[in-house]
Each structure stands twice: as structure tokens, then as C-alpha cells.
Image 1 (cartoon, rainbow, N blue to C red):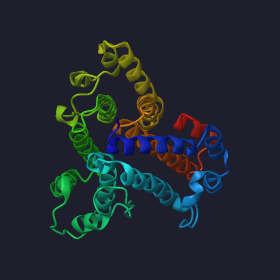
Image 2: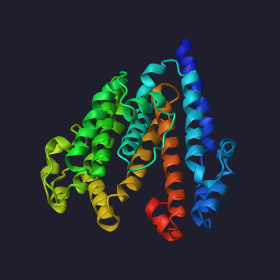
Image 3: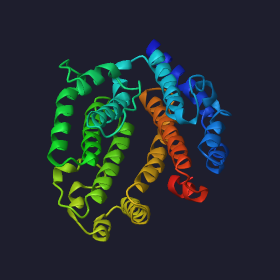
Image 4: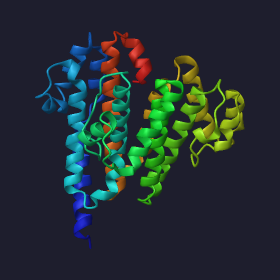
Amino acid sequence: MLTQNNTQNAYLVSLLKSLRTEFLDSNDIERMIGAKGRDEAFNVLNDTAYAKHFSESKGAHDFDLVLNKSLLEVKDLILKIFSKKKILDFLWLKYDFLNIKSLIKAKLGKQKPTLNSLGAVDVSDLQKVVLEDDKQKLPYNFNALIIDVLERYAMDEDAQDIDFYLDRAYLNLFIQEIRKVKSKALNNFLRREIDLFNVKTYFRFKDKEIEEEAFIPDGLIPLEKFRIKDGEKLIESINDFHERALLKGLKSGVEKEGVASLEREARKILLDIVSQMERRIMGIEPVFAFWQTKVLETKLIHRILTLKNAGVAEDMIHQLTGM
């Protein structure tokens, strides 16, 4: 007999499966890529389920607003129905880190802040702490993290270090939080996330001396492998055929297109993992899978619109997005 909580969660999973039909199909994506420019590509979204989020948009330059509203609608739905809301906090952490990253760069005069309301921490609280040096205590030891990143930046004034250190801090916290759920499927996803971070770190610092602490342990690719400086020898050292093929594909993409190619390949790899979770009828795994698929879709849309705005040719967009 199902408990009330199980019934609620099974209902949520069923509801999310029905919402899956609102995702963009290959024809929608092709129309966006084939559009004459960003404005026309943005208008393609107005012919899809994203149309309901256009009310506050003032034009194609507001595409982030539309995408964030779509994600916020899903987040609100999940929190309204899922019985154990607290264990879902790890899903929203990424958006807290994006806000922190944007605010730190704004504080340093690098860019105007682009903020979202998808995180677990109130945006106004983050603004006060980062921009106004307010002493209020934030969760997850964010206060110390913010100070640490600013001190690291002051040492070499490399803005890319902000991204690297915050991405690493996010993944470490994500690991800590997701392991509280005790799900084998989520742990498999996590291990692949670790691999992708380590591979990205390896190629970014390939020609520099890098401390082993920069990598994150417990991925599927053993940590000691990343001590090998030669990419070909690194691939040859991997015993598992699947892992070797994956690493070879990632290396080839980096050589042809740079580190940015890893984002495209990561999307494919992670979608394959989450698709297996979507088959479950209840529990946190199918909810996690739906959220991840939705996030990956919005990232793809964002990528296409950004490339259209930059005037990138249609065939190159196909190549860069893998679509």
C-alpha cells in the first residue's frame, strides 16, 4: 500500500512526464538554428510552450528572463508537490553559485550582474554580502567562500580563476549534498560530473603546473591518471574501453574546437545518464532527471541564441551544439 508521501511523489512524476511533451523537438531546434538572426530565433520560442513566459519580455535581449521563468515554474511545481522538499536543496545550488560568480565579477568591475531567483539563497542577501560587505551569515559557508575567491583573485587578477574556483567549490558542495540522498543512480551521475570537471581542468591547465588538489576524487576515471601530461598516453593508460573512448572523443573535440567543446559533449553524456532515471515511476530520481533535462534544454537554447546574436553561421552552430 502506498503512503500519502509516495502517492504525492508518484503523482508528481506522472505530471512531469506529461510536461515532457512540452520540450522542444528537433524541428523546433532546427528552426532556431536556421533563423536569420537572434530575433527570429527567439520568435521560434513563441511558437512553443515557452510562449507563456513571454509576458514580461521586451524583446530577444530578454531571452534569459524567459528561460529563467520557465525553470522557476518547474521548480515551484516540484516544491509544491514533492513531499521531502529539503532533500532537493542540492538541485538549486548551481544557481546560487552563478549568482555569486556574477556578483563577484560585478564587484571587481568586470561585468554587470546577471542574477536569477532559482537558487536556495535570497538574491538580495547575496547582493548585500558581496557588494556591500554585509556581515549577515549565509548558508553553506558562502561567506568564507566569497572572501577566499576575492583573495585568490587579488593574487594574480585572473578573472578565469573566479570561474574555476567557484565551479570547483560548487561541485564539492554538490557531492556533499547529493550523497545525503543515498541513491545509486544519482551517484553515477555525480561521478560522471566529476570526470567532466577533471577533464576540463586537465585540458585548461595542460601546459601549466597544476596541483593535484585542483582535481576532484571519486570520478570513474582514476585521479592519478591526470598526472600524465601527454594526452595520448593518458588515453592509453585507461583500461576500461568505454572510458578510453569517452576520453578520446573529448580530447579530439578540444583539439579541434577548444575547451568550449566539452560543454556540448557533457550535454550528450549527462542526457544519456538521466534518460535512464526517467523510467522510474516514483522517488527522487525521475524528478532529478526531469529537472536536469529541462536545465540542459535551456542551456542549449541559450547557446543557440547567443551564437545567433554573434552572427555565427548555421553550419557552425550545428557543429558547436552537436545538433
